[in-house]
Image (tube, rainbow, N blue to C red):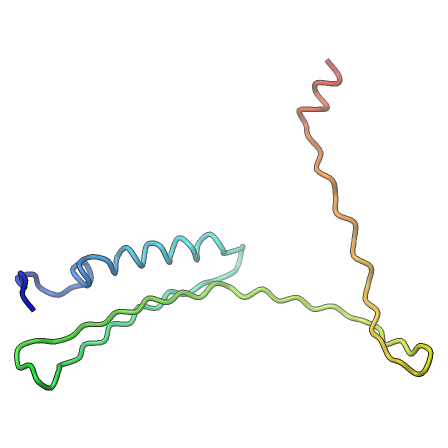
Length: 111
C-alpha cells in the first residue's frame, strides 16, 4: 500500500474523484427518464472499515445507486365463458396509432 496519502478525505477526493463521475452519470440518467411530476432518487453509500491487522489504515467503499420512476398501467377486462365452460379475459381493442404528418410535405405540394 504505497502511494501519496496527502489529500484530506472529502467527496471530491473519494475514489480518486471517481465518485463524482459516478454521480454525474447517474443523475443525468435519472433526469432523462423523469416525466412531469415524477421523481427519481440517487443514493450514495460510503462505508469506512478499519482492518483488524492495520493500525493506521482504513478501507473506504462507495456505492452509488439510482432509482428511476416506475411505470405502471391498469386496464379492465371482462370475463367471458366460452364453449366447454372455458374462461377467458377480453380487453379493449388497442387504439390505432396516429400516423405522423410532415408539415414540410404539405408545403411542398402546395408550391
